[in-house]
Length: 344
Ligand SMILES: [Fe+2]
Ligand SMILES: [Fe+2]
Image 1 (tube, protein in one colour):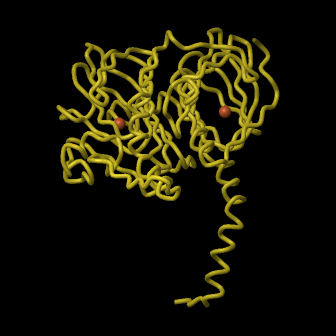
Image 2: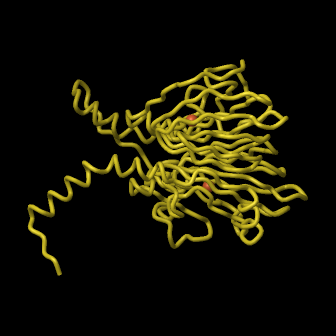
Image 3: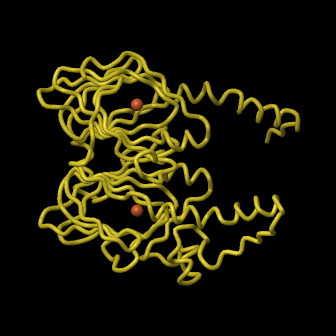
């Protein structure tokens, strides 16, 4: 076995950091971009829950993932859920394509149908129930990969209490939206002591965060989306902290492009996944072109120019789920606007 000197080993580690960005650029150029609905549909026939864009399946997406699933009529996700459902330390967006039902999120009921969207507050217990005679078809996107990379991915599921790490500690631990939280707050404030005040704020942070999550918007009805012209074309912000959500990682927009028109072109330092909600078209990603149809999924690589063209006769609607907010909070966000859309 080759034994490396300390100097060689540590020089290698330094060069790993130095080379990473260039290597990553190569991975972005080589990553899979288009996921076709007919392939996904075939897999959904065999298993009701299919991961589509997922780093564990070879995707180069580091911060979020997307899966499709079907909830059969008059059942619920996680067939044996009866009380709590599950909760997780990842942000989650769910978009309903077909069927009708309701969700119980942190004890509140939300009724939904096709075109509606849920932004599930972090670590809130939730269940999703199909109330209709038709299967519910939906997609979900979560920041699972980001939380796993941070070593803070917690999934507590009613069916698997043996894997709980907080909920078993009692009622307070089960009710809180903060992993490890619950119980009485002792922030140790000492009047006139600035350092103790700063520390008290640190201790109070989680409780404050929990209140903000409970006040946050959860359900977006399709009919409430407000589309307005932008450099990228007609856009509606769907989930964003500037419109009432307490999201820290996942943002959502909906774009609409009329028949024969094109969006603007842009690139950005965050991961983006697109669901084609209606219509058909073409996307140019740097020097490559992909044709897509309704229900196809696109994974847009970080910092590659992309622009969409409606090649059909119906309006093209694209749901864009991105981790811009996570990058904003890391101080790493950047969006470059190129050519503007050719319509208003
Ligand atoms: Fe969930
Ligand atoms: Fe984009």
